[in-house]
Length: 468
RNA sequence: GGUGGGGUGGCCGAGUGGUUGAAGGCGCCGGUCUUGAAAACCGGUAACGGGCUUGUCUCGUUCGCGGGUUCGAAUCCCGCCCCCACCGCCA
Image 1 (cartoon, rainbow, N blue to C red):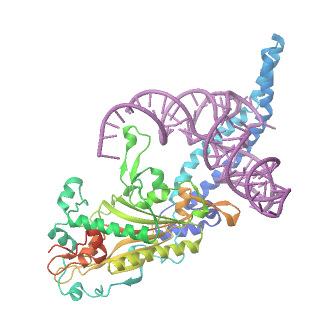
Image 2: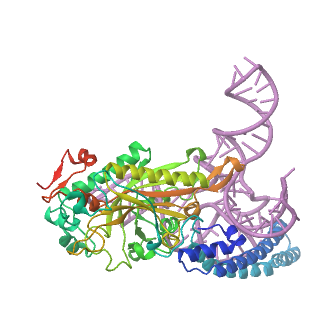
Image 3: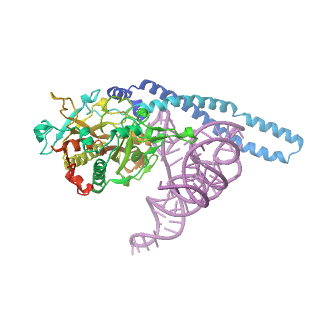
């Protein structure tokens, strides 16, 4: 969430930010509600101060009078009772006024808070303007010596490629029919070497981020409370995308939600904490199952493993000091880790700078990494896809937007021990089975078999080939 | 699922209606003493929000959370959340 002080100082900046992101939020109304709230609060507080002063003065007087009451004779008793009654009446007008203001404030705060949560983080000035992924800007690309995605697959390899769907089916690596039978559209079954490859790739990513880069390995809840979803910035905007477990309907105190990414649990871990500044930056990684409803994606990428309701992902997050240069440096570092990983897997990829319209509410900046998938893209004259880049990773830079929502702070020695909201970043390490698409399609052989990438063989008991 | 106990500051812990933001202790910071350190002693030590005269200023909120009773609530009442113990079930 954004800093309200900044909003008061420069509402135009936040209006521009929301417009550039294509998010509709009534910022004028928020400013007005904020003003109203503060006005009422000031009024109420001064009345409360008055009441407090009064009761501190009256209180002991009542107490003494009460004490005298017990051993007073009848005539004195009457006098004392009258005196007590008079004293007790004094703050009553103040009390009703305070209660009235309380009701007004509560009413305003409901709208004020929900509107506040909807205001997106303005994109950084260096993010290209645009309203759809079409306006994203390619930064750089890389491909292994053996494969140039600027040339068709046939030119590179000398034979027509199968799509990952064909390979999965021919090699019996996946079973979509039974996945759908059990759970409906966008569900799947991985079997045999399909499942083994899936596990291998996750393990490669996990070992890379933890052993080689020192991120602390975590296993976390995949089922979380609403606060975690709101805190990480996925709610309210992305409420439709999450599976909702309505435990309250069964008598429990709260509902639960299935996480759509390990980022949620990794970030919510330290919610409401003041972190020891010496412990920063926190570098965490997890491998988790992710659940997405894919609402609004009907008809998009319906076949195969590209867009599914459930997948597994190794995720990395960094929580660092509130310093823009440090944030930016970590963003670069986290992306470099992935580039190295993809280069080891010898998958052609490109880096794409997401435009303002593709950022989502929480990000100041986001870089997508897309791998080359020969089975995607428009069809050629003989009805075969010509190949296209498809998103496999996404690296976000959020400044303090997420930590402010999560109330994650550290004590800043530089500013005299004041508490400051941390910065946060996150990036995919590897998400599977989506990453199996480029692996299968690029490592396929003319006879229909698939070569196991060198780096994955240690995780496949040395197996070199899938199919014969 | 059943029964019982409990949630107080960075931590432990006292507090059952009246200057209690909260005793005491630990920790931490500063000082005295010391060649230095320790010990001892002295002092300090919350977060959040509002206001403006932006200050070693001021006001408010906060004793799990929400509501209620009261002139006044950490303390009484109601609802909720969480934790612990034992029993049952269980990967």
